Image (cartoon, rainbow, N blue to C red; front, side, top):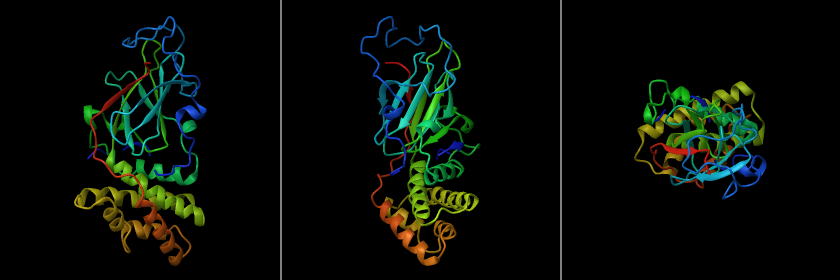
Length: 280
């Protein structure tokens, strides 16, 4: 099982697609003085970009796997690659095969509400990317980011002579964790936002329990898995109860979270790595 590092459904409370705020005009189909689409080098003499905030030129979306859609954009130098997950399932993003591009969070294009941010942090800290486990392509976990639905990631080359490129894979455990933790976090915030440390600790405990149960009970269908995960006395149930002011409130909120989980996308197995580049 792929395992974490940095960062972390449903309704993720965020700006919609990359293009809504951060992407301007589409890249012209026949740009002048541009290299062929097979070119690996940008022709611009500009300096490499320092972040993805100017990545406003649309690129074809990355859709190589079922449940995955990554809206893509670059800047004028094409040394950036902004990917926003507008699909249904979580992905893990790593550098390109040549290691010319580094991976960074893109908070300006990601959710800003406390429920989503706390859920994402818990997914990132739950052990999906443990240092002992390598990703496909022998990528160390320190060079990977978990990107749930609604979240974005930035790739930078730091070299004006290289096009930005990233690789991604669909990740089952990250999807399951984010679905569960975001549903619980939204319910907790709807009652009363817990203290930050308590909130983070409770969701992290539930995230770890989700990962372990998914590994142990491969026989369960999705809804059976969620019901078992949130049953009375389970680590997730106890952690969630600690976030709410009373047992009765926790029971109602848990029932609402489980009802929401009945409607989330079906979990799918991990995929190999796919490529995305800042080319037209």
